[in-house]
Image 1 (cartoon, rainbow, N blue to C red):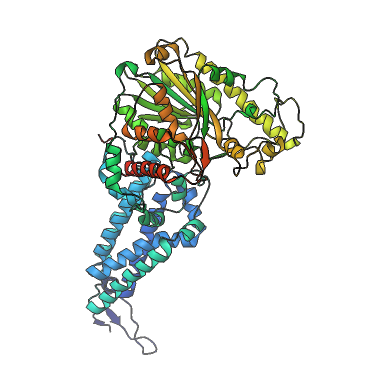
Image 2 (tube, rainbow, N blue to C red):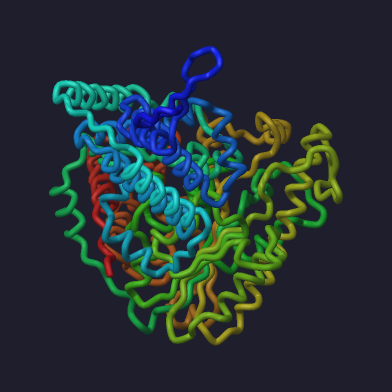
Length: 623
């Protein structure tokens, strides 16, 4: 005989004991009961938060995808710092709302939405999404509206994870923490933990510097450095920099009034000539030191061009690297390198107001020094990199013809400005051998220095020949064109500057000669006959030495252009202070190098710095 009871069956057996088993209904009931189990709800919510954090990390890896993603796991602390925020947020909302589905849905939506924005911003701008970007919401919308966002599997996967998580939390997690005191203690504890973690860990520059995933290329790109740390961790780390600091010496009202005392001047239509500016990598004239004899004469093409141009030297802030300092001070007129994360006042933007089409070329990678987003913020209509050309190369055999092709294919109904950066002659230079000697006598040079020097000069000679050919092709054109050519910094010539020392070239910046030798590179401003006629200037003579921030002003002066108000203020300062070296604090006042300006000169300098700071904080060229 069998006796049926609710949920179980009892039957006699040989030893007189009852045998029992769960029915299907009972199993379902117990599973449903698990939905309200507190411990299980907490564990599953934590796991869901971890999944959201991992998805954010995968989005944070962007174009580097799985190789970068897996590299994150080399640092458990990095994983923890990226996963902790969604877990903490989920439990905080859980204690506040008492509903698991709300606890998952809203924090996950925020985290994943931010991660997707960061993913797309890297894709279209090459620029990471930082907390400060929230202050430029309208600008970001205008920027993104000009791009087509392409969905890929990561975005669809993120949507699937989110929808599945919401559905699971709605139907499978039914526990509701009801005790007010317990919920309050839980929420307050999480807030306290968040405050401590943010102040002690997430804002720490020491910790940030120590932990990362794959660091390949991070020394050249702030975007790669950011990506190497995931997304949530560097994003939270960036919060501390969202509010720009104001220097003690800065007064916005005084700076605004000082800038407004100058009136922007338009370029007369009959003087709107085309301008091609070219910055050459590690380009220097070693013949100036009179310690080398060359065969053939490596610098003869340059000297021929100098004889028919305005020529001088840039006294830069850098040596053997950090090209962006020279190039960006030229384009903006800023005396010090700064961040260019948003639309920034520049001479490029000014030229666009004068109906100039602005573009340029860098014969290097798009990510190098974050040039793609920065050049867009500086105002270029288009900017091209190696990735934009099927057969592009870093050599000048590609660079100069491509600059010319861009010029020839321009819209001839608009005046034209281009800014171009070469890559050939980038160090380091081979030290074990030399293909062709250009230095007649090795003299006291070691084999290593002799090889480095000859290999550097081989590239320079090729550059000079191609530069001269490039200029020659513009001589007889009917369109007026002005060409500015400059070196960005002196070259690296061996560890500890061995080659310079062996040549007897003084580069000790504590001496005046050493300072100039260390920081000076040549520039020329050349014009074809049509431009000379249009501008009423023969474009010949000594342009003197000056800092990169003054170089565009020198070009404008040769073209008889007044420029915008800031350029006028900068030109006024240059009449007394024409070198401002941010690396050493040295300035040149009326021809004398000094670190200590007299009160009147110091006041003039600080007035300009205040105008510069105001100009950085107040973008004027809005559409």
